[in-house]
Figure 1 (cartoon, rainbow, N blue to C red):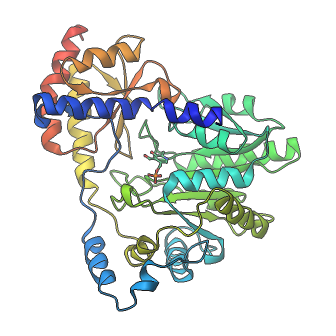
Figure 2 (figure 1 turned 180 degrees about the vertical axis):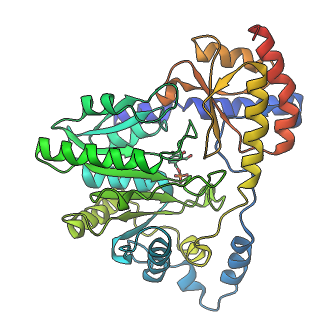
Figure 3 (figure 1 turned 90 degrees about the horizontal axis):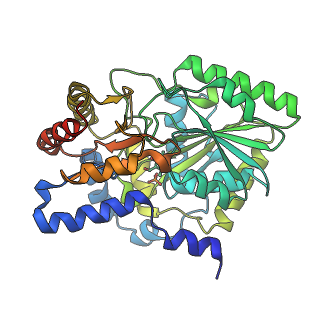
Length: 394
Ligand code: PLP
């Protein structure tokens, strides 16, 4: 068998391990006594249009069309609806011929990196980063290079970025709002990133692509803007997913948008189609393609996440813990009062608080707290955080 695949399959992710532990513990002491902050599974209901559309779709007379194969890159009318939404809100150049429907952001990223990279290329990203990036980059034959972010803000450290860009850099991968820090890059940061990549592309004599992983685009609080990457940097690709915006992570639906202004955009889009084919990702789920075409622009009620963020952040700060204030997504990245984050998580388990060590996100000395849980659970967990803080005399 292929040894890399064996390793990937036999070593479960730390997040999954903790989640499984939580399920076992819930059987022992009751689910209401386990404070599981491990997984980014949305707790907010999908917006009403999801159920309404599903009911309408399953009553449609032509059920073979509903459940049949679509075009490899997705149904034309679906891609048209998405392109029109992008044109109306972010980028007037959006075009259905540059959109490729996928089974969520994970597939969007694997396809995009496979379309871009050759063996030996490097994909640069910023720590902390989503744990699967390494797997996606290596599947594309590339090496993931992580650049530490500014530890006080988790924004880009441009000196460190410039130091790693080189002749092997094929792409830079950003994720804003970020999992796990919740940080959002503002216009100034994105413009500076674009300028840095333009200069580096010139210096090294080849295009460095900018890939934007955007499952949390709509999950921002207090009117914070998430700048649209293609407006700042031409050779760019957006990897989108409806997993969080429509609370549909199990249905596996998203898309790739190649900036049509990119030099060689047609060929790049064909490479995306090729990678989708090679990886067996053609023809994303037909029912959910049709659903997103009708729900485009709608989102779940993200005010619940905002309330959770405020309750938890206030309480943790009051207890003496420190975290960078997240403007988006639904995670808090908290500094641990001891350097070993895994040891801290073990102590937290004593109070049935299930947190994820930051090590797998490329950042030691932190834990991730996924607050996409019910506000009730947050309220019940507050005393447990207080007891944990007392152990460290905070
Ligand atoms: N990228 C980031 C930053 C994520 O947090 C996730 C999922 O949590 C993904 C990609 C994968 O998303 P999807 O479920 O749409 O494949």
